[in-house]
Image: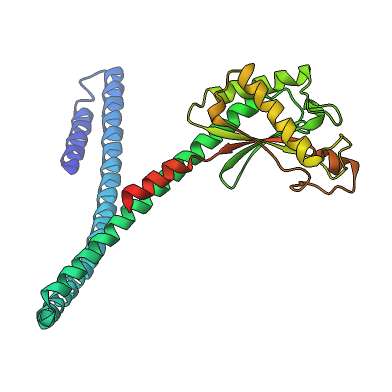
Amino acid sequence: MILMKLRHVLLLAFSSLLLFSCVSNKKFKAAQAKAQARFDSLMNEYSKLQGDLKNCNDQTADLTKQKGALQGQIDDLNKQVAFLKDNNTQALKQLEDLSVISSSQAESIRKSLENIGAKDAYIRDLQTAMARKDSLNMALVMNLKGATADMADSDINIKIDRGVVFIDISDKLLFKTGSSNVSKGAQNVLGKVANVLKNQPDIEFMVEGNTDNVPYKGKGMDNWDLSVSRAVSVVHILQHKYNIPPVKMIAAGRGEFMPVAGNDSREGRAANRRTRIVILPLLDQFFSLLERKA
């Protein structure tokens, strides 16, 4: 087709030469320019077609290569199918050979398989419950840290340890030396904590007093008494001033026997004198889950 077009152009050019004597030089140049433009256009089209042909050849080669790879995969799959069919045949024969198993033994095997499935579901339920508890604890910690963001880390420390939320408040923030009366300024701190805890109606917590190992000088009292008395003071404020239901609280004291630092330095003793709020895990929910699955 392209060669025919070229012949047509050449014929036009030859005809133009024959008619040279009959047309003006200006018209001849115009015709010549038109013929040249047409020739250039055809050559460009020819080059483009050559490029398209090369692309088609490349695509054909790629498709042939892909076809070979797919055929190899099909052959592998057919081999696997044949292997599985052979195994199934052998397994059926083995089952036929095992027909000597009694019906009671077969029933026992069936029940064992059912128990395995039930235990797997039970484990998944426990994992879901633990994941939910961890998420709730993390949200609680973030809320508490947000409420006490203006306080120094040395005064209040909020953390999760082994799945339990702890709020440690230094005694210098709450009490004067040797006293179990909460200072008025410290009551605002307890108020920030109480506002977060009140928004968690399903939790229970323990207020735990701790001291250093310096002997308490109160008459007829020791560090046990001081730690419990401070915990009770905090519980009273949470109940009467911030309306925390008393049924959700426990007051306890550990005296000097649960230190978090050494008592041989001033800083260590200060760290050990603390009031700790422990968010108690709701074990009854897990026990009820165990009872349902038992």
